[in-house]
Length: 341
Image (cartoon, rainbow, N blue to C red; front, side, top):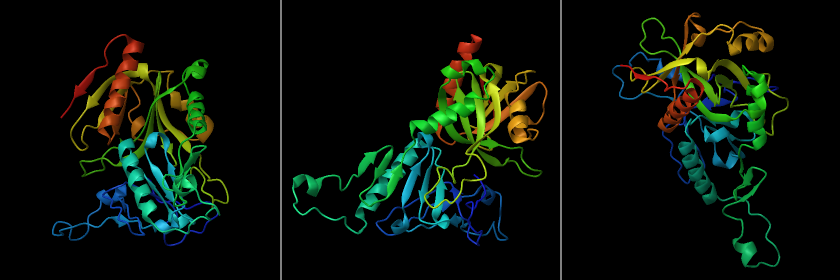
């Protein structure tokens, strides 16, 4: 997850103007409010003064009246969605990291929206069967947008968005001449597990977008709050939508470790740190003006390790399967996958 951010051109008040949240237990009653629980990463590492004796623990909660809801933006491959009202204070992005959960939430949301009373649209003078029972409950889909009968706009990813992401990745490939044939095999929003601080057994979780192509694998920082731009935005955000954090060739992967401690079935990708094939060295200097750092780069030398936590079991299995297939195609043997304690 990420810290709350303010929209460009908007004052920073006591309430954060833009939120990133995990979608926890969520009820959608036929009422006029929507309350997804916001579980920030730091919350899990904090304890109140009476933590051991307390029967319950309070997390943060974001409330958005359904009557104020104007649009819903669905992320690439249904990995997240954003709820947007009319002001920056009415924006929350829920990172489900699971296409099934996203689909279920949207289905329930549409049902609840259908039950709300909204100002009716002007009726035609001469009613007939089709105007009476036409697109009033399901809405109408045009150009990747669905206008619900409640007048809430649902926007789905377009081919242009996928093309933009493909173009960004293609510019950083180890072999740019293969860029025209580039295709994204897997897009998944996950976590990178950092080094645990002194006295802690668990490392912090950093939200990352993982991309797998036929020959490379990338970790990106993605801004899911400010993009796509809402209608009230007065100027573009200061940061780009995608920022490449690290990239490795699939053929440089040495083995995959699957563990059960600290985070269930977290994956550790162990790469040979091959000289001359660091995809991100020149990228960071050329485009971001800084020397790369962080856990993914700790211990430059013979090996580089990525510890990745993918909450969705389906996405995790797909990642392992696709990695193994591509690695075998490139290296001519099976990818070593080892179970650890």
